[in-house]
Image 1 (tube, rainbow, N blue to C red):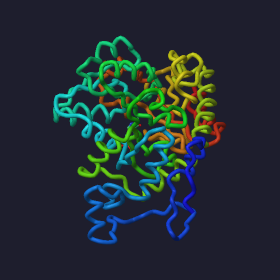
Image 2: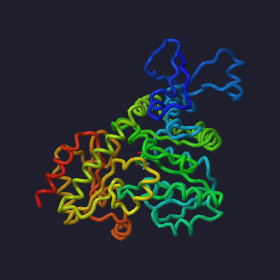
Image 3: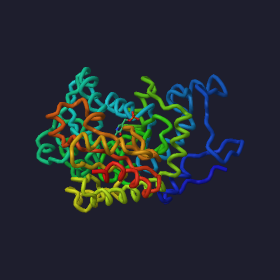
Image 4: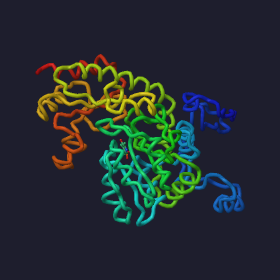
Length: 396
Ligand SMILES: *Cc1c(COP(=O)(O)O)cnc(C)c1O
């Protein structure tokens, strides 16, 4: 019953077929192994497992068969040799830097990363002597100035949140490698369906599985994908000792989520495009930020490295914060929450939520205007999403 995994499988097939090895019960669906430890045939086998002479399960802090289904599937989709699942997206970033850096190492990070990621670098990793240089994602001269032979790792998210700015991943990987550094990409917004950073030259991909990989807002999880040495040994070793492990139940949710990821991403992109077109034509909307619009300032890079625009649409309304809040408060269906990557469309006011900790000057510098509204478009019919947005926009 162990079907052969064909390396020629297309992504959609890999997302459904990779990683499932039925037990002697012949189950067709992936089982959830709720066990903390694994037993051995003999004292000899236990010794061989612990010493590493014989591969296999020992304890679920390190490996679990259900978690392995998710890891193998995501690795196959990202085109990586190894994947390590973690308890959250933040645990994936923490584990990567704890495993691959030492005190005094220098890393270069795009200013436009997820807010909590900035806090992780500035407050926690800095305590252990990691030196961070911040640069603007879209300013190539800043990358060239910041990345030197002292740089160990470069970290970016592309597209960024909430303004959907991008960086040329292949060019950045080349620059990093020229200086002996590696490139880490948080691929949360695109997923491997729309963008494959490893194929573009990146060394490691990070995921918050909480978002599109689950796709229905049910569980918290993360993952690190890359080669066998860095991820399969170093990051796995950190997990084994330090313990930010994914639960098998959550792994099962994410493994099943991957089966429908391509279909969902296609629908997310189509619905987001419809909403972006509606907003771009609306007289109360000053500007729309969406990778699918032909007037996106970096449309050429997007065309090269993304096969779809994604689901994040931000827009600036005429009338500042009062007008933005009016649009948000007038919605009757769209959920007011900062989460994203859900079947349910969400709406948020970045200036007073996700970016509320910045000073007004920092917000201005980052382009987070008071009239900015961020949407993460879900899987409802776009007709209804647009109708819900019109309630607050048409009232002017
Ligand atoms: C949500 C998010 C994270 C953190 O993931 P959690 O699963 O919430 O810990 C990291 N990066 C990006 C881009 C995110 O959107």
